[in-house]
Amino acid sequence: MDKKTLEIIIGKVIKKLTKNDPDLLKNNLHERTIVHKFACYLQELFLNYSVDVEYNRQRSDSKLPKKSAYPDVIIHKRGSNYNNLLVIEIKKSNSDDKNPNINRYLVDSSLKYQYGLYLEFGVGNNFGANKLKWFPEIEELSK
Image (cartoon, rainbow, N blue to C red; front, side, top):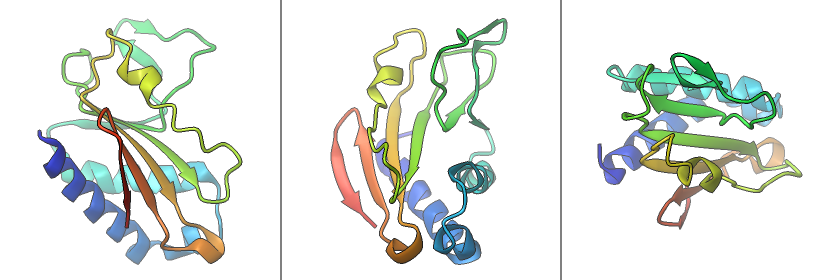
């Protein structure tokens, strides 16, 4: 799948979450709650892939080390690292930790992610002010 198609799909998912679940963002609910709902909407559009939250396995037979950081959302095919489409880190606009360290997943040659996305959801008074940063080509988009 090409990056342009991914951008369109991600845009649709953001709009759906914002429209159907504004209370999650306006009321500044926990990041995990927002990530979960976002992943549910993603899965609806990626029928041939698995969409997993905080997935902790590199391959079907081995866990990542306990101290590894897990990405918020991944779109992949389980059991192999040859179809890892997209790794997503999600933060809220009021988060103190806004370091989009997506590169740690992209540079790991064993994971083979094609794309990375840092997504910041506007919450509370910043509702609707979402920011996206795509990797490996770094492009800042505001939606």
